Structures are given as C-alpha cells and as structure tokens.
Length: 153
Image 1 (cartoon, rainbow, N blue to C red):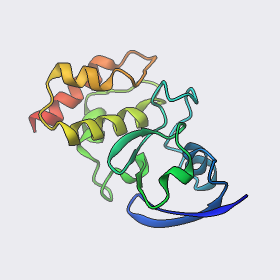
Image 2 (cartoon, one colour):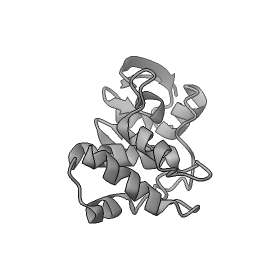
Image 3 (cartoon, rainbow, N blue to C red):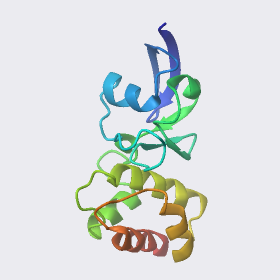
C-alpha cells in the first residue's frame, strides 16, 4: 500500500507516496530519477549504492524509504554546491581515481562522510574507511591519493 513518506532530499523537502518497504535505492533511481546512486550487489556489500542519511554513509539497498521518514538524505547529485564540485569530487577527477566509474558515486559518498568525521584521517584510516567499497578496476591507490590531497588542503 502506498504511503506518503516525507524527507529532505539533497536539501529540499520531498514527499513521495510509495510502499514504505520499498528500498531507498529503487525510490531514488526509479521513482525520483536520481540515477547517480548505483545498484551493485543488492546486499549492502559492495558500496555502489552509498548515500548519506543524516550525514552517515548508508547503503541505500539495505534501508527502506520508510526508514528515512523525516530524515536528511543526500545523494551524489546533491554533493556539489551548484557548479562547484565537493572537494572529494574534485580530487577524484584530478587524480583519475576512477576507471569505469560505476563504483565512483558510492566511493565519493563514502569518502565524503569519512572525511567529515575524520578530516585529518591518516593513510591507514583512509584505507580502512574505504575498504568496504569495492572497485573492480583497481583504482584504490589513486582513490587514497585523492583523499590524502583533500586532507592536506
């Protein structure tokens, strides 16, 4: 049964009538047409679907839209400020910290949350904080270098 669910999406109040048990990932991608958040494994393992819920990196395939009632949700589409890229986005581009790009939105969202919590994270903390986001293209070293640059700024 469809139920109105209200939450803040990328800074804007949003209400959508959907089954409250529908996964947040599918509401974002299908109903709201925000396709930056990717479907990877569907089991909260790979991190491709990472978004922020109240500032926390969250696997959107593992939470329902009902779980975000009255919460703050930010997707990769809401990370930049207008045409100004978020520092993590800019560093990923500068360091070529992507290859195929499929995992990149989830990587960036996870990294942004990590650096908000630990703005002076060490290399080891970066590696530990990012290891649960999988990249099959092996861009991990460039991802770490990009985040180290953000920290140095």
